[in-house]
Length: 339
Image (tube, rainbow, N blue to C red; front, side, top):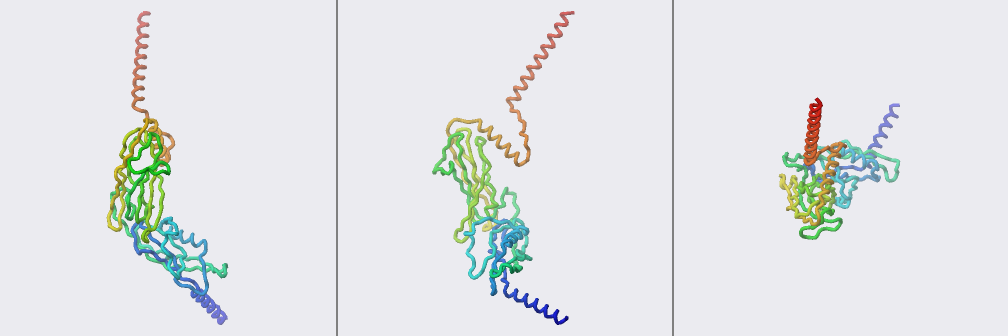
């Protein structure tokens, strides 16, 4: 019996040794060993050794890898695969993507992560491979009192007017009162534009405007990833005038300069012609109320009495009091006459 037990142990050891020789080694690779809070990190899970048997990653393992990274506090950035760096030669890439972390700390990506692989030759044969982790350090950006300065990178700020899909030609754009037109403010540069907030810009109260809609695009310039985030405003002017909007302004942290910096556009000239449409302002106030309603969850519009209505109600009250006083005096006089 003891000999049989010894033989079984040897067979199990040989099987484990066989799998160790045929199982691929999965290693995490990053484009940098440390990054700032919110700064993009490119990660890859690669195979650096091959055995006589070929494997493929289980389809559920990809979702498991991403859920693991989310549990570690990393956020994903959706970037087209065509913009990823070229894959290394003679290595199989199991997973790759751009991530960032908004909390400073020391992280071991891949620690305790087992990836399920299945045999290409025999789909019923599966193995669990523990990935070799990589150490990543996320450094905190300096504290600041600047508003909405959480974006990290080196950026530029630009703008443009358009009417529908038609872009406005150079010079001061001209629109009619009540005509719908668009203002696009673009944050572009080398960095994580997903964290870029809408630049601060002051609009005249004469404009009916909507909350900006943002759109992100990515491209590769000189081997580096560049992002562009566009904030698009819908505008309508209620009164004719020569307006100066803005300037638009944003704050960010520059890793290359190791300090906070700001961007600012020039003032944005807009000419509005035509007949004044003051009723647009009432629509503007209503839109602002419903935007606030969505944020606070309230459903009842605030009851506000304009100053003119208040004066009219006061005058009406005084008139009623005078009529009542006259009626009382007339009643008293009639009773005295009767006596």
